[in-house]
Amino acid sequence: MMKHPVLFNRRRFFATGAAGAAGLVLGGCDRLSAAPTFRDFLTRAEGLSQRVQRALLGRGALAREYLVADISETFRANGSQGAENLPPGYIELAQRGFASWQLQVDGLVMKQVTFSIADLRALPARTQITRHDCVEGWSCIGSWTGPQLSTILDRVGLRPEARFIVFRCADELPRYVGGANPFYESLDLIDAFHPQTILAYDMNGAQLPLAHGAPLRLRVERQLGYKMAKFLTRIEVVDRLDHIGGGHGGTWEDNGYEWYAGI
Amino acid sequence: MPDCFIVSPSIDTVSAGDVASTRKQQGWIYRYSTLVRVSHWVNVLCLAILLMSGLQIFNAHPALYWGEDSDFERPVLSIYTAFTAEGRPIGMTSILGRSFDTTGVLGRSELNGRPVQRAFPGWITIPSVQDLATGRVWHFFFAWLFVVNGVGYLSYSIVSRRFARDLLPHREQWKHVGGAIRDHLTPRLHRGMNAADYNLIQRLSYLVVILALAPLVVLSGLTMSPAVDAAAPWLLDAFGGRQSARTMHFITTWLLTLFVFVHVVMVLVSGFLNNIRSMITGWYAIESERRLP
Image 1: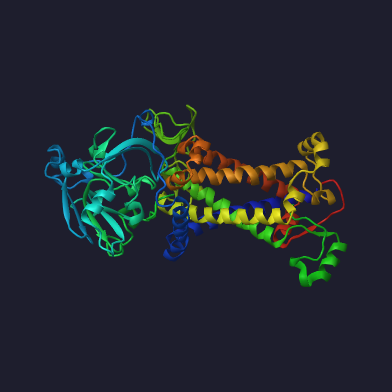
Image 2: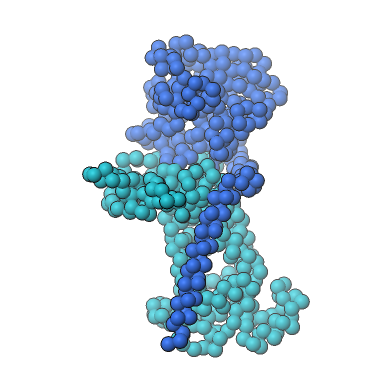
């Protein structure tokens, strides 16, 4: 008879303790997430993932390529898809078939070159049916056609100090409409010269739809979808990334996502 | 108890030989070595953070599919917010085409006193607000720690032969399978010397967790990485595609969580203080055999 109240008190003690600990842990995690030094500490794992994955991959390992029958019925478009994320005049440019659109390739190059969509279509092209993995968790399979990025980089010639390829885009986060902060993204030379890294102008055998980044988007098949910049306008070859945008190598990276998106 | 042995001089008791022999006389056994205790608590931290940051990541696209790609019309499981005829938002969970109202927990819950439309509620995600990028940072750091810790523990256990001695069921135990199951179904717990040795059911549960669930959760997680898939395409075939791997990752996570839940219940009912003390200090008190009150 005497034991029961004690037992209940003990149970209550542990239950209250557990709930309190959980609350502390959760609140603590939120505070830690917001602390830059702690976050920097956790992001060291990104460098480890990158080094280990690169060591396992080798430069040439290819992402799996699928059959026409495997192509997804619906290929979800994410991020910028239309007028609300594009500068004034872009829809008209699209309606005129991107006739006046140009891709400028500059920076640490031997010679600056400007490509029209017709110039790009005249280059040797690669078609690949690959799986697009979104950072959110979903995947879609699609067919992509366009010149390898290496073809373009060989055409302009890289200077010896070149380390990164920066992709400048026409699209903007909605709150920046006005053109102040267009999207950008970057790759190092390992992924830039990978055979499956292409600049796609066709998707599933037809011209790239606007929602998927017309007229030209990047495909980097060993990384997540957010690396694959859409609505390309310019490719810039640089030696470092810290002086561009927020300094993390891309718009998503400036918003907390990893620069190396192999995982 | 992977490291149960009657006290003998060990790394942990180098200069404490006298204390150890005194304790032995008083009915104590040195149950867990330092390495096992440290790896146990590191594992507790990892599993808790991996679950909570993993649910944060899941919330970014709260639907699961089978196969290589996502058939958005036919998810295996999805959690979403729906609206009643009167326009009232409710949380819904749909599993294999059957839908359930899960308002309050899944699909619609409260965060800081305000209703939010998200799959898993804020009290079980890290961070508590929707923030995929930060959830990933937590998840991958502790995923590395989980793997390093697990590989360290397993290699130590195998090399020190404790794995074979404490976790592999021995022949005697197989002879009494029926008794072991019966024993387990009746609420009678051993506290004496019997408690110092893992029974058949315990051994099998730990083996399933260590040799099946833990490797599965790591491999299915890795199969979601496009780079790992390029390096090891056989992983895609093993799981039946990236989306199947994601579904397996989710299922394995909850099986591990179920294990932790049962484990904690057993720890509580079979002498909480003695158990928790042995996992903190290594020392476990052997009581004379008696029925629980």
